[in-house]
Length: 85
Image 1 (cartoon, rainbow, N blue to C red):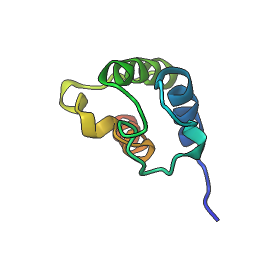
Image 2: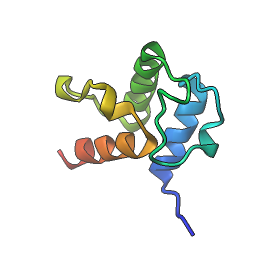
Image 3: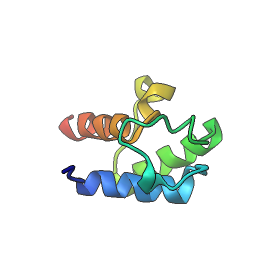
Image 4: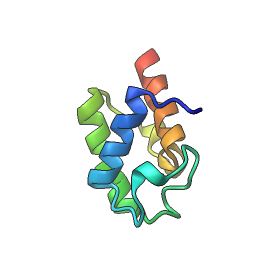
């Protein structure tokens, strides 16, 4: 049995609203490549902005990399790092 955190649920909602994925964000595994699922670089910027607004954080320059937004898990990890700062 897998458990879904509220952060993961929010990330998936934001991906559904802004990620322009070719598949339902709910159907993707936590490590599925979002770019392979159809997210473009432009959509990833929209996802990042929506995440910043939702979680009241700002992604620093060193986190503005494709691998940070590659999967639900990598986004959740990045948000955890920002929360710890």
